[in-house]
Length: 463
Image 1: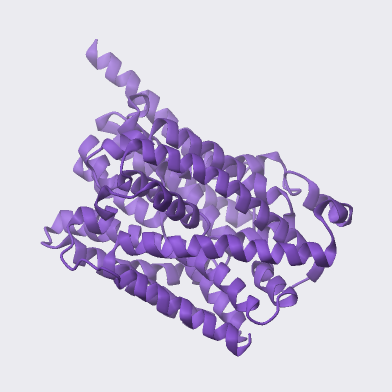
Image 2: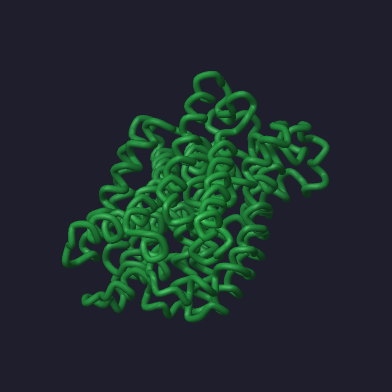
């Protein structure tokens, strides 16, 4: 990095602080702090949803560098499908629901105890660990230091906690608008230079190995299929629920999701192609997770290098700040404040963001891979949350009151046990299957069994 690149980066951090403090309302209500007063317009909705969904940008690069076009099949296509279903069946109902968060909605629908359990699960689901890891690696790349990744991770995580704490969700929205502009402009510029350097995509297609050209990346259909199931994450993702609840209307939320899917498709094409061009241009690199910054350093001149670094930084931080905020409100407001009658849940949310950042740092010590973190968190938590959350808005999926605690906990524990067994017998970083079965499936199967068993019991008791 040159001096001008470092100045650009410093200016970005100063601008984030300015956007967080601009027209700050010191006397926050819960609705204004958590949902920006439920007044988010369509452009703001699209900007914050699109940018938040792409925090795992380095993980996408790692995958597309190693497995090519299957990155779009695994991390793109299933999420479009479930986002559209979310818009059709859930967005309007979430906007009209009085609850400010998922645990509050579960408490209102089922019981206070189930709300507490769901808060704990959501706190784990929105762990900022993958994004803290990516930021640490990114700053390690910029500074050239190979021994201070953890230190950089701590510094950036604390910075994010600081500026989000100032204005809450309004700070997230304002900074996301800046970050989504940086996301697209940076990748467009880098792709143009890659096309000029190595040729158009159809010209390099024949130079790619078979794994990079196949839809499954050489992993097989079961591996791809489990990522489709993990994409059910969309239905229980608190950032989706938060933005739908914060929109000016249900119609705004639905239109915003449809538009976001279009923007996601464009950006997925950019990220997949950039990872493939990294493979073609750079050859073997020590850390595939850093293929995007490595390619940027190789192709971009001074000034543009700093801007592309901001592209990556903004993409990650847009999700980090959102996940820190949601995990903070889940632990601080939904779990601690509601059970211990803390007078100001906003203060509790701010302190809980610090706790979330600390737990995230511990997790990256255990799972130093972005893809592994996504897989583990998604496979274990989603089977337990999926049906109870859907049941809030769709009566068919509503778990009977007597079984809701079992439905939240037992599927998660089953998937966790299956994952541990898979780890004990597998040597592949991307495979946790035990007896040929991915851990997501046993948990989801048990959740479905509990749902229908409960319905049978309810029918029998009525008769």
